[in-house]
Image (cartoon, rainbow, N blue to C red; front, side, top):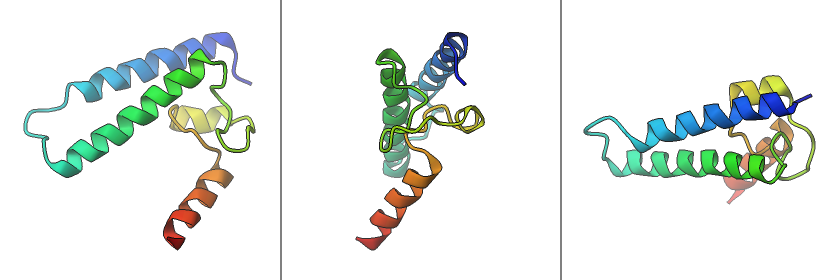
Length: 94
């Protein structure tokens, strides 16, 4: 279970990651790099928003609790494994 101390730890980590991508290495200006930067920035900002709204650690689709080990691997993850896979299958079907 994720407690208030864990949430603050994740908040600091997410803010640190956001600061790092907002100051990219020189020369990383390709359109692919910009798209990747924007996608990651949205993921990090979304996770910080979920912390502020008390929804951090829950899947944005099915509302199931996300495993702490899962969040340790990817604190910005908005979906559980099952929903992420369903979304990916849906994208590929288009």
